[in-house]
Length: 226
Ligand code: SAM
Image (cartoon, rainbow, N blue to C red; front, side, top):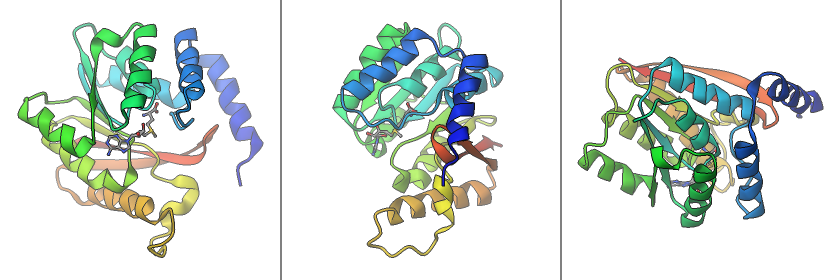
């Protein structure tokens, strides 16, 4: 089970070095008050996304799974003026809350929210020649992780970085043989399918790291497009 120190250490790290400002904290509060689920990345993870954007020199970022725009805000803060984050969200209500939060954080002008099922909006981005994206963050319905990675590849260039959230799920990623009726079965199968693609596709070099923290025992996968 979760060790209470994981959360306490996350809080300490957030206070000591992350610098989650009022706009981010208020955006999170507003999203929870609006009834959105509290499943955004933690503050240290959000800052990591910002730093990845910065260290890759990303100007164009693609996010799949906006929720209330918390991770979106961090990503938008990691790109230079003139850059853009395109973020895909299925729920119109989530997109509406995100729009308010992004405006409050002062990054609304550099974020474009595409509302609809990502498997419908991603082909549109390709048709619009919206790519290539320098960084892709995948954090939506896990059932589609493989499809999202394939779309990321279509919208990528050599050197594009792909980050996939929630690939460990408290260790349940090991449960390959859940009965089809299990409520977690489809998500776990999707996570495993996505990881299998990251590990086997010749166009990708990948790794993953396990994490503990305020969100329990989780993990991120990272890949670079060759
Ligand atoms: N990245 C966000 C953050 O850290 O602040 C959290 C995203 S939350 C884990 C997942 C989001 O994906 C939800 O808002 C959900 O509505 C959205 N989603 C689920 N299925 C989707 C789909 N098929 N297409 C696009 N978005 C989807």
